[in-house]
Image (cartoon, rainbow, N blue to C red):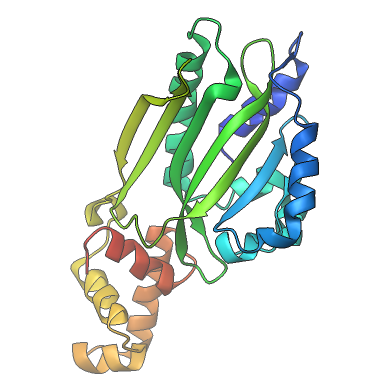
Length: 262
């Protein structure tokens, strides 16, 4: 199943629009970032500049692995569209079908909008190599837009908020800087990420297995406690992975914890 959000196809096609609008010259950012790069590893955020017309990171700070769980080389190789496929599919759907659509219309309707004064932020879950998910926050502003105000080049930061954002919900916000310099919130949506057991068609016995796995029990130990064969337990575990579209039981346990099943 593809996890590629429609939004990124949408902004990629925006390069064909007639009459691009340069919001501000971003060459100066490269000089500033590159000159301070040796110290960026100390930052708690990954800094980036993305060009959607070419699907490239024009700049990506070297501390990716500490924040995203993927090295700079891995991110550069997969590009922005490849990286976005690692988003949790539920979060990606919210971002593309709700947030970006509503946010684009809102920004578009601001009289004499200055895109450099609009700041977009949202939380999302990023799939990790071990099957778990990390909760991150993306925050960016547009450096270059097309004639219909679609972002072509953005600059922003990715921050790990796993330790401070444990609620099963996703936030999407837009702030706009007033003439006096104050950032004012002009858009906010909070989406619940709670998913019910019934939506996955999980049986009581499968939920029982998830609870045992959460406690650290092996298939052999679960079989002994439930008076079932190991083969039955292994079969039920496979069924759980299939129903929840998970790669590992670790991912299932995280799903269960996030939604209060265990």
